[in-house]
Length: 55
Image (cartoon, rainbow, N blue to C red; front, side, top):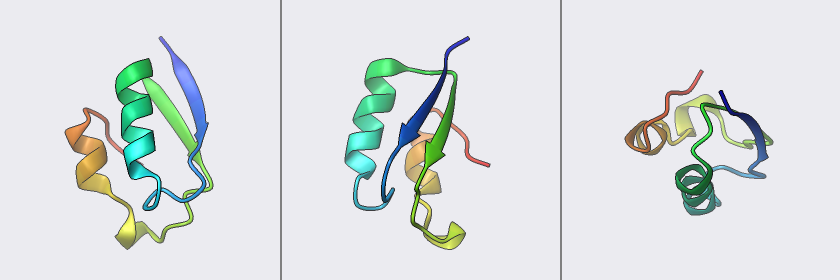
C-alpha cells in the first residue's frame, strides 16, 4: 500500500497539477494539505473521476 502526502496549496487553482500527480504516482491513500477551499467548493467530482474518494 502506498500512502502519500501532497501539499496542493490551493486545490481549485492547482487541480490540474494534482490530477496529473495522482495519475503518475497512483497512491492508494493521499493526505492533502493546504486545500484552501471550503468544503462546498472542493472539486469532489474531479477527484472521484480520477478514481479516488474524499473525506
